[in-house]
Each structure stands twice: as C-alpha cells, then as structure tokens.
Image 1 (cartoon, rainbow, N blue to C red):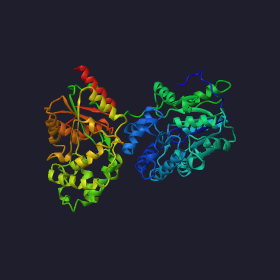
Image 2: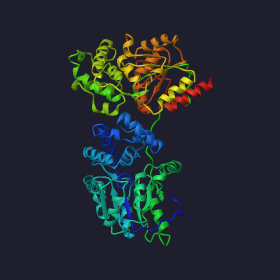
Image 3: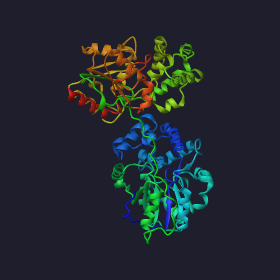
Image 4: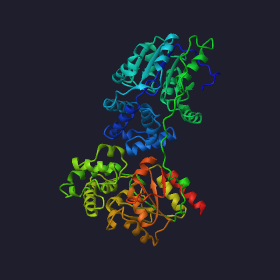
Length: 559
C-alpha cells in the first residue's frame, strides 16, 4: 500500500496512459513488435541503435544486445510482460527522435495485423472512471497509440462504456513528437481546459511515462503494471533518476490510486462512497529458468576450453540465414528432396513442421528466421537426420552461397575478447571447433569488429578439416590431437546448439551449453529429452559469458 503520509496536490484532472495502464493489449503489442523488429535493417535503423556501451542501464544494454543479434525480444521480456513499445524504442534509439518516429510508423503498420483484442487491465475500471467523474475530476488519455487503433479499442473495451467517461484523448500520430516528449500531455491538458501543472496527474506504466510527466511539468504517478517489488522499483527509478524517471508516487492498482486521492483531498477523505475494494492484482507466472545452472553443477575444473564460433563467440546470423535462403530453392536440383526426413525420423513435432514447410515451399518458415535461434548445422540435422551424404551436399551448397555474404563478424557479447584473454591469463588452453569452412573462418577470425582474434586460440578446427562435421566427434578429436591431449572431463566444449552438445558427449568431454538464445526450461527439456533415442544432455547451461566466467572461477576454486 502507498503510505498515508504521502500527500499530492488535489488533481484538477487525471490523464492516463492507455496500454498497460487502463487496458491490456499485450498480446497484440508484442506480436506487432516481433513482426516489426526483423525489419530494422531494411528500415535503416540498425546503425542508429544506441551502442551497448552507451546504454542507460544494464537492462537496456541487454535489450539492445539481444535485439541486435536476434532482431526479437528477449524471452524474459515476453515472459514478464512489463516493457512497453515506447520503452523499447526509447532504449534502442535514445534521443534520436527521427529514428523513433520511423520505428513507431513501422510498428503501426505491423500492429494493424494484430490489434482488436483489448480488455480492461483490471476489473472495475469503468466504476473507477465513473467515480472520478462524480468527484468532478475530468479524465483524459495521452497515448503513443495511433488514433486509428485507439478509437477502435475504446469502442469495444467494456462494450464501449468508457467512451462517455473520457473528456479528452490525444494520440501519438496527432502530435509532432511521441512520448517522452511532453507534447501529448500539453495538448490533452488544453483539451480538458486545465493547466499543465502539478494539479494535473499523469498515470502511466513506464519510465517513459514518468519522464513525459516530468518534462510536461505535471505530477507523475507510476502505475506498477508489472507488480515489481519495492527493491526492484527503487533500482528502476534510481537508474533513471537523472533522466527524470523518478515518479511522485507509485501504485499497483486503482485501489491504491484512490488511496492517493484520499490523501490528497483537502478533507483527508473522499466525499463519496468508494466502490467495494477489489482484491489486489496478481503477477503472471514467472519464466522457468534452466535448472542445469552453474550453481548446482559439479564439474571438473577445465584445463582446455574449446568454443563453438557462430552464435557463441561471434554473431554472423545475417549472412548465415541469407545463405540458407539461397540454398533451399535448390534442394530439388541437388537431389535432396527425397533425403528430407519423414515423420518417423523427426525428433519432435516442431522439427517435423520445419521439414514439412521446407518440403512444400523450399524456404524457412518466417518464424524460424525471426527467432534466430537455430544454426545452419541444426537446420541440416533436422532436415536430413542421419543421412551424412545429404548433409555433406547441403554444406557444400551452403558454402557456395555463403561466399556472397560473409565478412565481418561481431562479438556475440561485449568484452568477449577480454573474457578470452582472461581465460588465457589463467593458464587455460583455448581453441575453436566450428562447422564453418576454413576459408570463411580464417577471414572472420581476423576481422571480428575490426580486430584480429586469431592469436587467442592455440588450435582451430573447421568443418572441412575432417571427414565428418559436428555432431560427429571428429573435430573435437582432431583438436585434442593438435594439442597433444586426451578427452576427459577437464576438456570443456562450449556451444549453442544441440549438435555441439552431442559432439561433446560423444567425444567424452564436458558439454557447456551456451544459452545465448535464452531458451526457458520447458524448451530445453524438449530439445534435450534425455531419452533412449536422444540421450545426450549438457553438463551445465550458461546464459551469458559473465555466468560462464563465474563458473570457471568457481570450479577452479573447488579444485
């Protein structure tokens, strides 16, 4: 509850944000965001994203990094359902108003395909709005939503009961600038015939809303739609305080908003009877994090660490998917259509749907490319199963197309090179095992964001250095021969795919699954069932290299 000692000025008007404050349109909003983010490159917005080093907070840094690599939202963002479209664009583009305008327009085009489902964010909002009206407090809405969508949603939510309860509404496409610029609030205040001062309260669910209120000179009330705890809220506000991101008050629901009004009323009590108090809102179920966590893993300290290349140490996803797109229409000419696996050979229903889609259309399903989670090697494993000859033909064709796209690689995370140098400084031997062909790997390792990384590795074994590629153990075995070492638990292989895990376990070394794609526990259990047909599971899962570094140090400490 909000402390009773907290007294704000009695409001001459209340203005609300729309999505995430009054209504729930999260499903449509996130579907539109996921549809829009793969277009960042075509929109010319990749180069305009805030550098990770200049992110305003650690959470923004992670959001920017994940979208840069995957062109989609982090699964934790989708699971928590707390972050708005406006906050995402604010994090991605900072003070670049023009970039944000382009992003909002692209979002609107995508949202047109999904909007329509809308419901009150909590029960009884019409009753609360009616009470405000009876108190003589006019109510408005200031939202970045476009007028087209807002009017449609207002007409259907609560069977249209809210239309007569709102005295004003201003939408993002009606102002010169979107929030966090104050324009929408100023225009809404004029429409309500009131001043934009502390006696106008703006109630919104995002830090962007708080900043908007501060810039407009009105009282900022943070609506805690995600039901963050007190410590989490304090971290959020502290991280954004310099930007004006600390509100005058925070509420979890409309009951607490009425409590604020009681405190603000000159007589210290509401002159009208409140509606019956409703139960507090409940948070959504938490995301299930992987339970193969470093904290519970019992591993032998490493002496040798071998890394996968693509999607583990570096990001080359764009070039890889372009090459796969060019290859798949050639399957018939390559004699590979009959080699596609049948229903009895598929590992899962999801794998079979991928095969069926490729068989029917000779291209990847758009969701596969939007997810950006599955590697070229895993794609070929799904398509051709145990048919090594077919996979070899596919890899050769991929190589031909990849020549048109490969070039500079980017570090998968910031400071990956520093992490590798730190591991070498501990006396560990480092190597790379990759299905990338030698001609491409040599070029990429010498140009990782303009730096030559080739001196970081004692050995590097590529896909065309052995007769069989991962998931066969040949490449790991060759690397160990190069190092004069034997397979064992003190050899770690770090990779992001099921094929990496299979290769490690068959070779008899420790498998560290790098969960850069941030799969949750149910999905990891699906791709690593541990059954008789698919017995191989990683020894540990790490979500990022900070976790991996801590794991290495912990294992060395136990030794």
